[in-house]
Image (cartoon, rainbow, N blue to C red; front, side, top):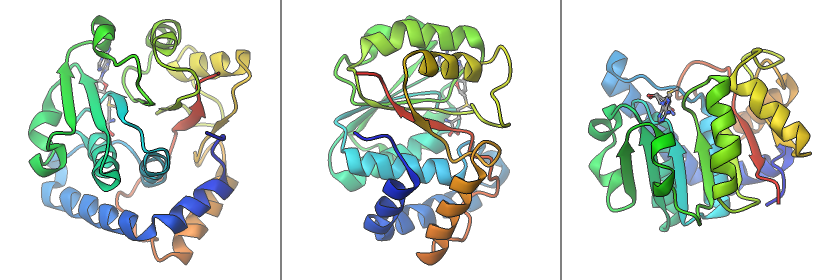
Length: 233
Ligand SMILES: C[S@@+](CC[C@H](N)C(=O)[O-])C[C@H]1O[C@@H](n2cnc3c(N)ncnc32)[C@H](O)[C@@H]1O
């Protein structure tokens, strides 16, 4: 898969506009119903990009590390449902997600493992074809996954990591600084819609959404600190 760009994402927004509109409406309604009892972390652009890449890539086995209340889980499961193919393997230390994810969305396409993912490497399918990471934001955890998880999944698979760019640079001694250094050392390009790091990309995508009538926010925050890349081949 090519590295994500504003151009490629614009095409995906156009291609999947109608399905995306339905998922956005349903996610917004869920948030409104749940009010403050739902803690949702992914911002709209990064959640939508995740949905669009999953639609485009049509993975059979997606791994999600860090579910919390299940906001990203619901976005990912919506994409697998709309693809009509794919299973999600999620990991978290807390199991709040289990009671939150609607049964019809989980259906037979979801497996949740409770516990520290570092103790459950054997439960990550060796033929995973999409990797989503939004868990422990410390440097040690990032060193664990670059050294242990990345080599355990196929080369080249689409991967994303949350909470990297809340500012123009990742925080020192953080997950973000470790993963960005690792990507640089392996000559891997990445894309971010981060407001702080890539305001032009964010503005261009916001305009694409405006033109498609997708401007109404699902969730109010606009930091979008996630990075998207393909594991090196
Ligand atoms: C930022 S939250 C995830 C937010 C979620 N992706 C969303 O969109 O709302 C981070 C989650 O990672 C989990 N976590 C932290 N360290 C972990 C580990 N070693 N193994 C599994 N889960 C972990 C935490 O329990 C927490 O629920």
